[in-house]
Figure 1 (tube, rainbow, N blue to C red):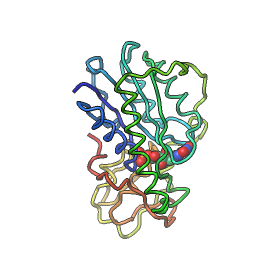
Figure 2 (cartoon, rainbow, N blue to C red):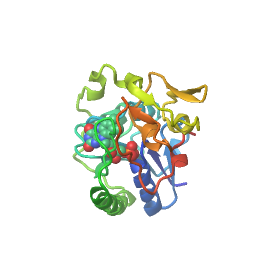
Figure 3 (cartoon, rainbow, N blue to C red):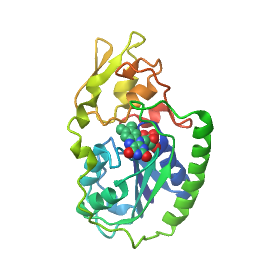
Figure 4 (cartoon, helix red, strand yellow):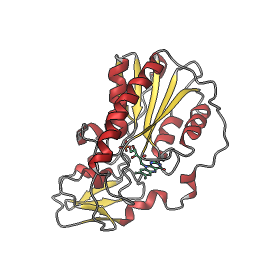
Length: 251
Ligand SMILES: Cc1cc2nc3c(=O)[nH]c(=O)nc-3n(C[C@H](O)[C@H](O)[C@H](O)COP(=O)(O)O)c2cc1C
């Protein structure tokens, strides 16, 4: 393959965008950031990172994945951040992480998609979701054209001295202590397979949550019987309509 796009995705928005761009670019593979990093990066013409903004910043799993890569300034690197609203400092943070890992972010884009932070709100209603999803396809086409010609945005600065907001949230990774599992749970194990940080272990056919939660909400959103919730709240689940759970499983 000529190009590679690394994605991190809880409910499929970022994966759907990565797949659309891979089709438009052609000869492009997509690769889940919840797996181990590959070691042949210098063989790719274009390297992309697609992921959601979390609390105005880069999710910890994305940060540590990029930090583990042997990047170099000769690589063409682009970034795409999906958001439900405001992307805050995520773009600047991404440029800084890539620079600290030896690379240079050539261009970056943010794409508005349905929000998925179910601990705070239900899925957006259809009349908001549908236009957002169709606009994101259009945006993917435009981004692909720019990445094809290897656009370089001269305004991107490598260093911003940002203190990531996420690092200021003391219990960031222990969030899952407030997940609840009700009697509907059938022990199907999907939550454990989809969790990007291996934070879920099945004990006596019930999920148990450890202390490395990314807050992606995949376990809540994808549970086929809506057995998992945050603090017992009852909210409408969100999943990107064109993505299947298996496509998000850790490799
Ligand atoms: C923990 C968490 C924090 C979020 N923080 C933000 C935010 O600060 N700004 C924003 O616009 N969207 C925020 N969102 C919404 C997601 O970035 C957005 O819905 C994204 O497209 C989800 O992508 P995914 O389906 O690939 O996981 C947040 C979602 C989660 C789960």
